[in-house]
Length: 207
Image (cartoon, rainbow, N blue to C red; front, side, top):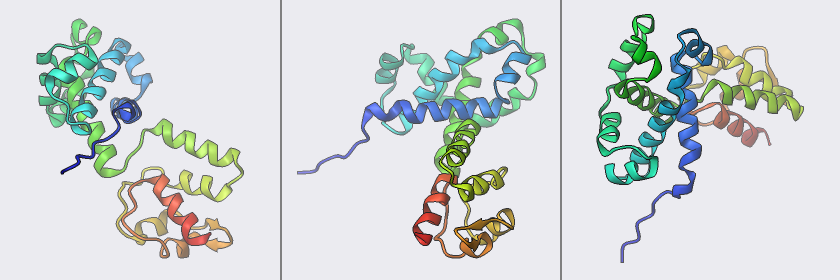
């Protein structure tokens, strides 16, 4: 008897929220949406994030996704067929958007941005900026100064990190539990998918 192990569907909201917030990062944040008077895009961006996650992580059909999210099957298909690269190119000319495009984000744009955000989180280990800020503030509040210093120094780092050389330069001058960060980075295993995994691996090797 073959038992198929599938993800717990109730968890889709967590990943979909991360994808949605990463989509906002790609756009340039809420400030950018306000600047171009496109705050009405938010619901469509959120729905696109859910659509992408339900397909990529939970293998839902177009019909199942449409029923779950409250969209037509054709809209779901359009989101899933969207080209991330074309969406990014379109985003470069926001000042040229029509009034209708400012009011209602084109499906191919919302879908493409959601797909790119998912790729960045899933395959490059990136997280929304607000998540990194929250993690930094939590580390500071819990009086874990080395963790806060590490996270602050990682700004602009591309993940996954494949070797200690990348981190050595970023973390120069930081002391982690009495040890120079430049030495600690050689003690952990690679690749490192994201900042949270880096903190975990450092804790494991230093105890």
